[in-house]
Image 1 (cartoon, rainbow, N blue to C red):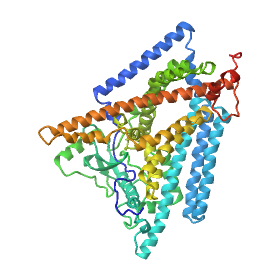
Image 2: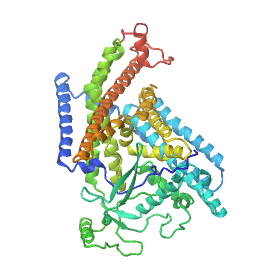
Image 3: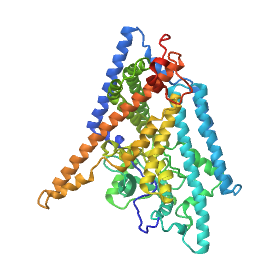
Length: 599
C-alpha cells in the first residue's frame, strides 16, 4: 500500500468487432478436416450403438436416455420464467436507491436479502421436483448466469452512483476524485473503469460489419500482466464501421457534458430505460454489464446528420462499394444458416456426450457400488477415463462456449465474439483456466479480481481467490445436478491452486539459458527455437495433466453418483446421516454396509 509506483498492466473489459477463433479457423481446409474427423468418429460410435442394440435387443432401447434426462421440461421452463421475472426486482431496488428512498446501508441489506431466495429456492426446487440430470443442469447453470448478471448490474450502477457523488463533491471542493486512494498503485483503475464505459458507448454508436480472415476491424494487442490478458486495440480497417445515430436514449458522446463520466449520467436515467437495458443484458452473450453493446448494423447506414459517412482513400471507397453490394440496403442480415449450423453442432455435441456415457462411463462405473475397492482398480479407472473425460470437456467447450454463444451473438447482432482464446496452446494451468472461458473470466476479473486489487490486495492473492471462486461455482452446479455434496473439485482447486499459481509450469530459468549463445550470426534464431521447444514441452505436459485430471474427476464423481443411486434404490445399505460421502462409506465399510440380496 505504501508503494508510489504505478502499474498500468490491468484494465477493465473493452468491446470490439471480433470473431471467434474457431469461426475463422473453420474456413481453413485443415481445420475443416479435423471437424470432419470428429464427425466420422461420432458416426462410427452411433453405428456401433445401433448395431449392438438391434442385434441384442431388437430395438433402439437406450436412446430413450436422451429424452429421459430432459424430462419435466415444463417445470424447468416455469422455474426459468420465475427467475427471469424475479431478477427485475434488483432493477427496482437500484431505482429506489437512486431516488434516495433508501440509504446505502439499507441498499446493501436489501440486496443480500433479495439474493438469498435466488440462491436457495431453485436449488430446493431441483431436489423437490426430482429433476433429471440435464434438466437440473439447465436450472443450476441458468441460476448461476442470472446471479452473475444481477451482480454485474448492481455493481456497475451502484459504483456509478457512488462515483457520481464523489465526483460532484470533488468538483465542488476543486480536488481530485478518490484522492484518498492516490497512494494505491492501482488507483488509475477507477479512471480506467470510466474509460471502459466510454469506449463501449463509442463502439455501440458505430455500425459494424462482420470481420473476415482477410480484414478484421481491429488489431488486438494484449497487455501482459501475469496471467491476465486485457485487450487494447487501435482501428485497422475503418471501412468496417460507420457512424450512426443511437437507437436508445443514452447520453450521446458528442452532446453530453464531458466533465461527468457517461456511466454516471446513465445511472440517473429513468427506471423504464434501465429495465429495457437490463432486459437486453439478460440475453446478451456477456456477463459484464454495459448500457448497450457494439452490434452489427441493422438499419440504413446514415450518420446522425443524415449524411452517409464516406471514406477518404480510393481503396477504402472500393471496399465500401463491395460491402454495399453484399448488403444492398446497408443493413446486417441475421445469418439464419449460421444459426442452424450452430444448433446442429450443439445437437451433435449432445449425441457425442451420450456416446461417451453410454459406451464408456456407464459400463465402467455402474457396478462399482457392488465391487470391492482396490487402489489398482481406481488408478486403472483414472487412466481409462482420461480420454472420455477430455472428450466431455471438449464437447462442452465447443457446444456451449462456441456454438451456443455464437448462436445468441448471431440472433442479437452482438459483434464481440471472442468468448475464448487459444487455450490449447497454454503452457500453464492458470493460463488455460482463464483462456478457455473468457465470458466467466471477464466477469470475475471486473467484479472480483480488479475490485480486490483496487482495495489494496496483492495480484497473486486476488488471482488465487478468483480461481477458488470459479471452483466454488462449478462445485455448486455439480452439487445441484448430482444431489450429493462431494467437494472433490473444490478441494483439489484449493490445494493445487497454490501450486498452479505460485509455481508455473514454464521454467523461466531454462529460457534464460539461451543467453549462453553469443551474439553471432544465427544466435537469435537459436534462442527462438529453444524457446519454442521449451513451450512445446510444457504444452504437452499441460495436456497430460488435463487428461489425467479429467479422468480423475470422472472416476470420483461417477463412483459417488452410482453409490448414491444404489442407496436410493435400496440395493446397498449406507448411513444417510454420515458426514462421509456415499462412495467413501462403501469403500471403508464394504462388509458392514453393503447389501447384495436386492441386486
